[in-house]
Image (cartoon, rainbow, N blue to C red):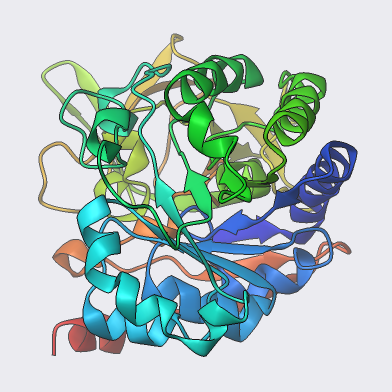
Length: 394
């Protein structure tokens, strides 16, 4: 079961509210990282709206968040443009060719002419600051964003914003480095009265304890003063980080070639794919009858004791899922005792970039989704059935 803590969500958004107020900027939820819409009521007071990656996410923002909507996609078709022009507030494009294709239609729309709809262009400052190539939009040949040389000779009439998204799970020093590259390559545009907003994207770990929020505030204020633009931030992970868990049951335990293996009721590839794609090692806790030792997961229940798994120890198990994919493995984890069928394992920090990516691969049961309210009570939002699997491809 996925369990999301409403108290943890509100703790994160309170931090984000304080940051955006101190920086005098706008901050929205990136739905690609967290789109559990039944949790939106716990976010709307502190955030300014949503960033959507296309029409469907934009519809979700319109229907359930009901505040400012920023839409960006690597490409749109004609029907999407027509629909988005009716309600989105920022419509950002990935390429000059896409903008030129739809510019006439958009500029003729009443919402554009009244200033209710603004259009922007995603830029690529060609400044890599991360360590994982799959998440780096600044690699040579990137399909995301326009480089400075691609702008040469083009008429940018109708555009009023620039948008970059180059960070991934990073501190504000990476933003400072990126802003220097943006200034060097696109500063002449931002200094023009034509451009009124700058979207700094996501990837900012604002709610992490170590994150230098004062530097972020300084950078945003300096940018706004330098260019006379409105700054927008659109983190997804910072909103939902450390707010949810995925609870799993041990279904089988056995030994193979000297390795102890545990098959779980949840799958890495189907239910927490970033463990394999990013990749990263999740924090895992064993629910046990003995008193808790050390840290606890983001979501706990009264009467339960939690023991954090470690990288080495006397009882090491390879945690695998119930699918036929040979690589459906979350990793090797050491526990304080032997695992048994029926044991509960808790995978921490599974609210962001997890539920949005789940699948029904192999027809494996999809975990239910629940909210844990401030008083500790549990509200099950969705339980999945065979019909969900059957109807997905019908």
